[in-house]
Length: 265
Image (cartoon, rainbow, N blue to C red; front, side):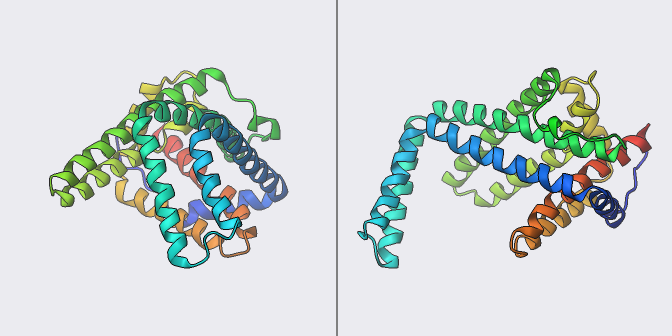
């Protein structure tokens, strides 16, 4: 495959122009997605992990009751809370992993709806607020299958890091994380591909993303760093900037994907 060139500044500029055309809609969709995600996460987390929630509530109750006053006391109590959480996680690691993955899948339903809205906007189609809630089940299941593989890869990476740290090979931990980030960048178009093409399976989505990103690794890393910086800087604008920056960032991702697909075809 020939090298696909793109301009980081042009991509973000196009996203900003698209946002300005329908800024009220994008802000409403962004706010709705964030609040829905927070509500669902809070509700399901309390249902899935009552033991962890009780540990956190006990810590908060100590502060509210005035039992913890000095900074050193807060640090001791916080470390104790984290120790209790870790003990529970060690004893229930499999249950926690399964429930955490289910929670992630539920949240991803709305995340994919948000991605679909940005993708349709970039393609010149009229986006609808209802798309935030309506995702093709076939596409959703393939994304979930891909998430499962990525989750397994993340768990393997974590376990490998613990093994390396236990054997005094800390320098190799950085190599493990770099390798993981490399794979994530190569698969970064996976969700857009599955959302955009109903005929693509999870494996085909992985393969296609791997092909598209083959000769643009370093520029893609720079692109993602710029987007992260935009989000970081926007947080200092009384959160108003964040609710503007977030849709612009996802529109930028959609524009980048759309550009790669158009050039490749």
